[in-house]
Amino acid sequence: MNAHSDSAHASPPLLEVRHLKVHFPVNRNLMGRPRAWVKAVDDVSFSIHKGETLSLVGESGCGKSTTGYALLGMLLPTSGELFFEGQPLDARDSQSRSLARRQMQIVFQDPFASLNPKMSVGESIGEPLRASGLSSQEAALRVEKLLDMVGLPRSCRDRLPNQFSGGQRQRIVIARALALQPRLIICDEPVSALDVSIRSQILNLLLELQRELDIAYLFISHDLSVVRHLSDRVAVMYLGHIVELAETEELFTHTLHPYTQALFSAIPRIEPGRKNTRRLILQGDLPSPLNPPRGCPLVTRCPHRQPVCEQSMPELQEIRPGHSVACFRADEWNR
Ligand SMILES: Nc1ncnc2c1ncn2[C@@H]1O[C@H](COP(=O)(O)OP(=O)(O)O)[C@@H](O)[C@H]1O
Ligand SMILES: [Mg+2]
Image (cartoon, rainbow, N blue to C red; front, top):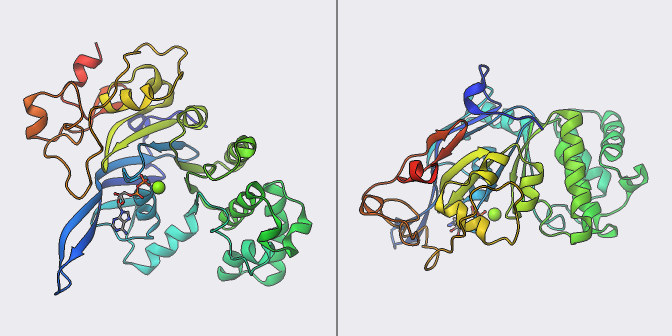
């Protein structure tokens, strides 16, 4: 893990996301025109540096997975720009798609759904290698190496996925994600579907691989103690927006945004060293991204709201070094 702050870097970040929006058309009329849009991701900007872990946290439905899919080109953004080491990525352009496919991979939550049950482990891991032009012999050698890297015996390669436990399957999925030597892996809740007893083994594997290969992770999770353990920086999402972004210890010890306060208040103990221990319970329910509030996204639930919060959207602003917050009252919380 490396400590990074956006401003400290002269070379372009590994991945840069500028003003990403993903709006899903819903409720189409007879002519097929959408009557409404779900604003799943609504103007999100961040960057990920080489070898860094950036975590995305926030309640279910806040747009974390959609953000990940848009980075990979698995769905088309409504607007916004993506750059990989300064090169623009455009999911509509085939050259750019193949760059993205080579450099970025994803590990999903459910290792049971991620593997073709009819393909042997060796075929699954070797598939991207053969598609990239390797001979079957070269691919077979590389598959053995990949199995070593994820801590599985080479004899696994001839067996079918149903002969493995959830944790072993997630190792197979990770081996397949590593096949083309990506620089960034999007880990979308990679241990949430696994038994608690084996979660830390998979998390440690991800950390070891990062140390060895200098891979960056976009780590999507709702488990804040895991996030604190393995992230360099954390971005907090609410209703399609990033409301706070900082280096991990900075975020946990100088929590500024009321939403982050509420998120952290919901877990029993994430101290030590946390200065700001105001507990905050949000009022009301999470609004629908189909009909988000005007102004600040948190306005309907925030106990600190003021008239300005209903009128316009606060921008993400750097309030402390490397620590950005989207709240009109951020300076007050920083005192
Ligand atoms: N294909 C889709 N069509 C319409 N709405 C969608 C689609 N995919 C996701 N959504 C909605 O977008 C929002 C964000 O979803 P998602 O990114 O999966 O959230 P998270 O991963 O944070 O739980 C949710 O309200 C979800 O219902
Ligand atoms: Mg998700």
